[in-house]
Image (cartoon, rainbow, N blue to C red; front, side):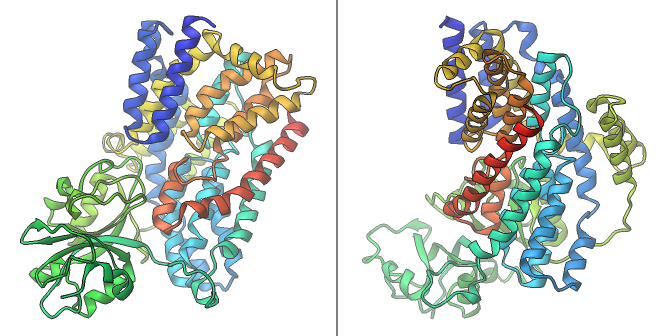
Length: 582
């Protein structure tokens, strides 16, 4: 093993660990790794920023710009209204919503498809009284499944195609992935739609002996204890049993009150930082047992109440509540918070936001809307959005770009550049504003990781890994090698994003195929599929992270729903690769 190979392996391992810990922003890790690779002489100065000019990165930027236009067109509004009028079973509704989500994910990135489908899904949930837990995970999984069908469905596919082009001179065509991806997506969506009502039954149908699982989100908030409240005189240790409240901090005269829960007694005028189901807080406020600061000050008679989820690209990620000037400058208050991984320290204003957290906002509706647009959070209103005259022009222009790419008249980056230009000329897209709203952390991560991924091949590291793996697996049949590559890709993707998996695994797959004297195409298809078959954890993909916060899921819920889907997808993917690519 050479110095370059050893240093690259250490660098990759360090970056993968840092990515999985989520303690630092992904773009910071990627840039630090990029510069470290240059310092270790893994690539030349000319190659350091070459990734940002890659057609893959350019195409991702163009797709994200187009998605901004399509997301404003309320693509699913008519579908949601149809479900409200029709009388389908829960399974049929889940399958239809998931199928539609998977379909649009074929032509745009996974998060864009999930974001477009989410508002209509919440409307259907409220109107038909279908528990959100039966709907949110299925559409999240459907967006991931749809992404494996086409070249532009996910950045991982484009990166894999880029590796195939480097190895053979021609990349994959737009729907080459569909031979494997389409059957896997259809079967996966059908399986999830069948499982969801059984894994997440309606709470009203549960038997008395069943373990209780709250259908409502748990909130964290700081509330005032008025005189005459039934909490006055109660020790903190009694609050979970008597009031279904989990106390965290007691503040008296703007100072923390310390002591054991059985010794701390609530007094009138105290502030209590506590966690409970949203319905518990609503009931305690209605009865006057707890009062929000807004109600105490009598400021909120005309305030609107809106929930919003912190998206991956949001500027709020990593910020503490007391520093959110985007809301305070508009007289908008964060009155409660549903956290994905609550770490309660200090006061409510000291809580730190992460992807998937849900803010409960109170203030003028227009001010809230402006703030959410500025900080790139997604409102979770269950009521229908304001109707505008529907225009199918953006969809027609986008479809034309897809068709031009499918017939290989031009490359995807050129085709979608034309789509962006047409949308801008027709007034559907403000490029300056849209560029400011892009998910820049993902774009920077992609551009920075491409030179590092190329170094895996140019330094001989890929060949080293492939020969090591080849000594463990018999290569007389290429299916054994494909099975291992698929397994490794699926093993990595819950811990790092799928684009990174594709960047790291593609050169390894090409070298592994060369070791067995096989065509790399089947191995690369396995990498692309494995990078997107991410259903076991809520942190492997941003869609699952958002789903956990919005649907109030537990970590174990992803294991229960994702394990059967993962096993079925692995077996079916191998079978389809064997039939079509070997």
